[in-house]
Length: 191
Image 1 (spheres, rainbow, N blue to C red):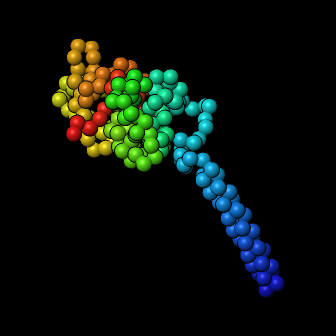
Image 2: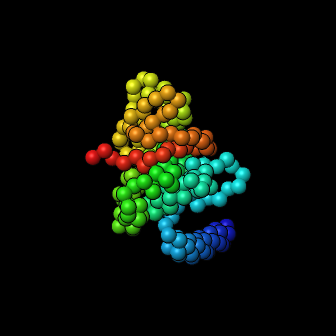
Image 3: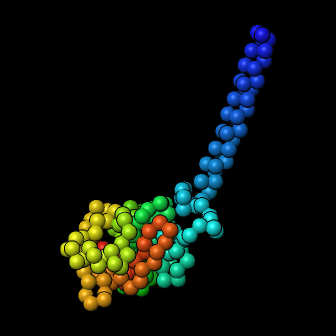
């Protein structure tokens, strides 16, 4: 019996040592891979051709949102747009970024301005689902939309047009994890 216990102990110990050694090398190669890429993207790095597209995937497939996607990547906040949600994103079109003062976008895309860029982009995201009817309902009730930055943005309706903090909603797209409201303006802090 003692011999069997000693044998089991040695087998268990050997297995633990082998597992520890192999997981250490896997971790090291994983760290090298993470270092080789620009940054860890979490769920944003998952490739899935079967599921419905999430907010980031829809934006990345839009020719009208190439500047927005480049800004999200520069700010390294891709993971925010792929979380389970629900999330509402007010997605400025390329022309909205082009309308900013000359050099603004280029300056924000610099690595040293990553935090400012992330704050501006996060100001375009709201927890919850706000499609066109939801936005109209908030406007009728005189409520503002709570944004991920802690700001509250005013929603107004003029005829059939919906405005959020002065940006006109020009389209609404349902995604697997929320709503994209395409807007014609970048929503910047008022101060």
